[in-house]
Length: 541
Image (tube, rainbow, N blue to C red; front, side, top):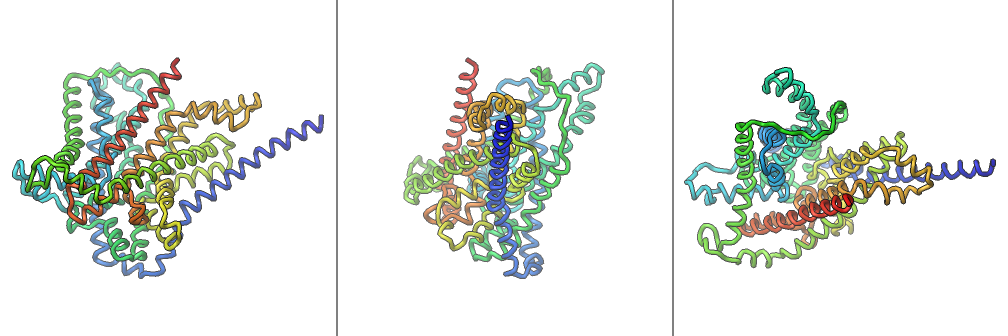
């Protein structure tokens, strides 16, 4: 009897020890991949005069430009996206699910493509410029603001849609019964509910714009933002010290956002009842919804229409005859090579990233909640506070001169780290919705942890896994921020080909590359949607 008890005790100790070792190893791995590169940036500060850099006129001008355009864009994006999300969630319009999907299309192309779209539409020889005789310049603050709005408002829209989806609608039913007018319900119920999410979404959009250089590169003109200033210093002059100084500034907004989220965790609406919601919107409300959705679709469609029109002409606006000559030019410049690099990077990033983030989320969410689990959770969220441009320069400093820096695997690694936290949160939240007693049952039945994960958790979270794969793949295809400091002639992804084409003023070729990236990402999204439908059909039988 004692021998049997001792055997069981040793078995449990082995399981606890193996899980603890796995957590410690994962924490160490995340520390090396996410936190350690930042120390290399701090070390690089010793090579420059920090005060001289931050007090220089170029730095202060770039900082002021970035702050101003980021604030204006964030306010504009939040106002428009909230209006759109609120109207769609509260109306009973037909095809609103199609509208919601179409609005997210700008997320499937690089930010630099949005800047290119503005040039094609409103540049000196732009389509709309020539069509309506518009004389105002798109370059400068206005261009950067509009371009940043075009790629940031869909992100804010998705965040608002998700928040509104979990709001308790029974409160509004009670308010209707009490005769409280709609405008008072909006002020007294909706706005207080959105207070904390609104601040988080503002920081998210602000950080997106504040750390992006793609739009500013295309339509900034003399309006130089901080990321573009860093890009020119590092890529153009190999001045890593100045890049390190700018990196610290670029980290601040995301860092503040993370601290705010951690200190102001919204407990949510604990009284929410999951039930089918029947919207009883008025005809006027539906008309307004259709109008706003129509405006959003025009914003989404205009750059894509411009790409299609410009890509299939000989030389806009000199020769507008239909031609495939621009495709030939892009092929000669290595379209297939760059596309192959992008597909390899995106596929490896997705497969490895999903496996790693899913495993780490399991350790943090489904094992014993101790110090190790909490530490793992914090470390896993740390990459949220590191913008892509900062991560790229950190890896460039850390691995510069090594053989690893010249391989495609460093691009895979930096993409995994860059997009890890969001994918991790998808899995972490999915695990949190699964009954915690499943583990107890599996232990009672003497089912191994591996079989439990394989037979229970993975089928239960299948849609989440597909969404994680889609997130890694699409973002790896469109990102230019982190990889621009690490790619070389042999490993350049397709999105970075746009930078080269822009320097050579091959606008038509940029349009073609943007269309190819959009086509690949749309195919991936449709495939993920199809797989989800197959899963739902299979489990419904």
